[in-house]
Length: 360
Ligand SMILES: *Cc1c(COP(=O)(O)O)cnc(C)c1O
Image (cartoon, rainbow, N blue to C red; front, side, top):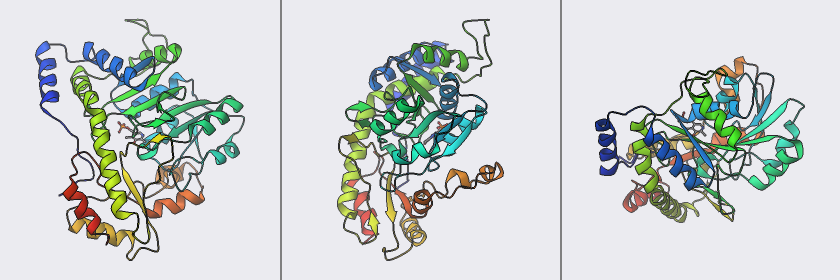
């Protein structure tokens, strides 16, 4: 069996967890601070704030940026639903803008059409580990005085023109779920260079308290534990190695699949580092069998192949009930073509040969 995702956990993580358990301090404490400091260091931001998952990190980041009821936030409909949900948590409205069919990320040229006098921010997603076209998006945000928030939940270590994603906008958000490029079991992280945003994140994460017994706003309990942080500290040390393995595997997959009729392999823009949280191909009508038949064929061989994502967020039942009626051209097309196949560090060269064979 070659699963679509698998965390790489070693003896270092096990020992680190045991050390925390034996220390008697297992809730948020020194280890969480250590993870925050090393994560900020790695991303190249002044600050990092840890939370209990990526979704809470998105919620905290948006609140800390001042997103509130009545505001509109432009985002992509081709993502995990948590991206848009976090906007709804703030009482704000997600406004979906179409994607680029080559990168699967927000098409910068379409963003401006969606700006109204209620628009406060653009929430980009570096989908599957592939950086968005940040220069163009930043230019639009600057021109219209909008905040730029990066959902980098799938993109730890991805680079755009030499800069880590999560350090380019006003703040970045990461998930540390087991399917991501590094994990803490469940966990999240917000990165920023703004001391105001950092301070607000810490307050919101802890019931709205600015220090003990001094509640200044409505907050939440979104704290990480030192048990999680201990895993994260060890995972972060290994992250560059994990990324190298993912990129190597992606190159081998592309080598084997690039000339297969009807298959479009991932497109990597120059001057970016795609970190391949997912290796996602397009199965077009020119391929000899349908995408669904291909998935079955791969499953029969023990190869985990999944469609991320089979429908745009605006087509989820709940969003339909909210009144979303969009039908964005590229998003509609891409959701019918995409297929993700195993690329994680646990996938061997032999596994890759077996995967490629199914396409020939
Ligand atoms: C995983 C993910 C999230 C949510 O993170 P959790 O840690 O699962 O809450 C948000 N956005 C994107 C793009 C993700 O992939």
